Length: 201
Ligand code: SF4
Image (cartoon, rainbow, N blue to C red; front, side, top):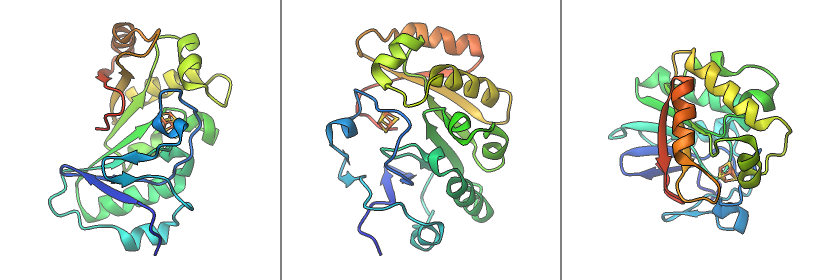
């Protein structure tokens, strides 16, 4: 049994930490400065957990209102495990499942992953992070060219599915116009939520 934190709780939500790897290198992220701590949890992983390990270590869902795939990493980088774990949870319970994502899962996995997510995930919270590609590049430093457009395309695809979709951006970052992000989300027909730096929800 690993000492890594694969599952953690905040209030009555159960979070699943599948990976500490990202397709972005966000300047504002504590991880970028080497800090993997969130509340009382350290979310760095010595190794990536296997599906069987996650299934056997899964805590009880009793008293849990929502399951959230979220850590200091991008869950869709481990898409197969994400989907299988979410399907397993749905087979046991009708608990609400949310994916917090950078919205680059289709780009990275080289196919539209929204239909697969729609079968076992209820909601996606997508880090829009900026009102245009230039500001996005400044703060998120994507590894793959075309990431901003791919994120917007993911939002559009998700909006057309059964998924509940919310785009987010963080208040107070230089050059980030949260109101312009809100307007962009509205144009895409999706909800928007302004976040505060270092607050996970
Ligand atoms: S995508 Fe999230 S976890 Fe990854 S570097 Fe950016 S803020 Fe940090």
